[in-house]
Every structure is written in structure tokens, then in C-alpha cells.
Image (spheres, rainbow, N blue to C red):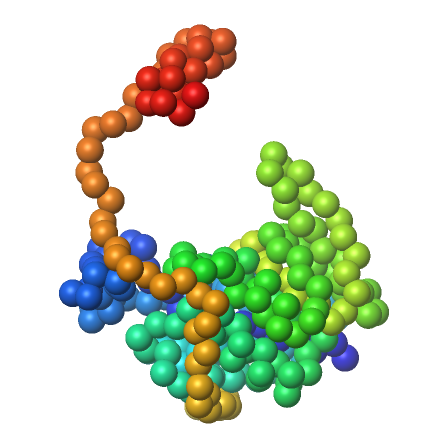
Length: 255
């Protein structure tokens, strides 16, 4: 039976107004609402689809953050067989280098055949988790995946390219896939079912004693975008718009 491991994390809800902390180098987390990373939610859905189709075992693993228990129990209600929480100093935020190293250590003990991650997160300052995790584990990585089929020790993946192009790739397992979209939208789970799962399922906890952030970016300052009326709408056919763009580029010294 193929064992699928899905990684998940919480990210800022961009519907909320974001505020910068007094330090000027991070978001103010006091009242910030966190939600599951949209692409991680699709990764969980894709894993459950594969379980329903091929009888796979699904494990979901995530760092300990406020609200993460609800996310993990929701994953269990959808069909995840095991849910794991990494317990450590995650509340103030952690870069993706440190998160990937921590996930890699736990992954080696779990021994999955396939790892699914969200292709990216809205708080990725230093790259995405998936490629780092694949590197630390010595596995193949394919990102921007929108569909997976398992055939023995191989995964047939559909990878999206710009312009609407779709490539079909054959990947030998074990491997890490960055999911952009599951084959169907993440399913809705009733609150009553999640509450029932809170009584029936348990979250396995893994202590994280050290978070190594080396390799990540050091943020020197953050600021909100300046509000200004600097947009110019260009009218005309393709040649007229292209000519006007060249004029603008010359005016600002780009060419």
C-alpha cells in the first residue's frame, strides 16, 4: 500500500488588514487571522482522492500554530489516517529552510512513498517548502502539479506550464510533488463531523528541539505599498500599444 505524506501550514488571511509589527521586520501577529495555505488544502484533497482511488494510506503533518488542531482534525474528517503536529517554537514564525529541515527529519522516520506539499504559500519569503524538502531527502521534485495517478512504484503527474500547456510526466517514487490544484476542489466537511473526529481521532505530537533557519533571508525592513495614482491605460491596436510601451521605457531610462 502506497503511503502518502502531506505537509500543511497556516498562512495570513489576506482578506484581513495586515499590520507591521513595531520591529518593522515582521507582521504584527497579535490579531492576525491564520488559515490553512490554499495550496496545502489542495494537496490534502489530492491525497484523499488517491486514497479513494487506490487505497493509499494518508498522513498529514504540520507545525504547531494556533488553530492547527482544527485543520488536522478537518483533514482526519476528510479521510486522513494519521495526523501529526510538530511541537516547537513556531508561533513567532519560521522560515521555510527551517521548516523543511524539520519536516525532513520527521519524514525519514515516517518513510512515505509520496510526499505532497502545496506548491507555494503567500508568506514564502525564501522559496517554497517542497523543493527544499526534496533536496534534504534526496528525492525528485515536480512542482505546479494539477493531477496525480499512481501506477505501481510510479506517479503519473500533470504539470502546468504558462500559456495553458499541460505536460504528463512519469515520476519514480519516492518523490515530492508541489500541488497547485487537486483534481477537484477541496471538499467541504460539516462542523459536526469535525467535532466528532475530535472525540475519535488523536493528534500525534513530535517535539522539535531546534529550528535551524540558516540559508533563509534576513528581513531588514517591511513597509506597506505606497498608495499613488501611477497607472496608465494604453489604448490602440497591438502596434500602437507596443510603440507607446517603448516610449515609456525610454522615458524612464529602461532602454
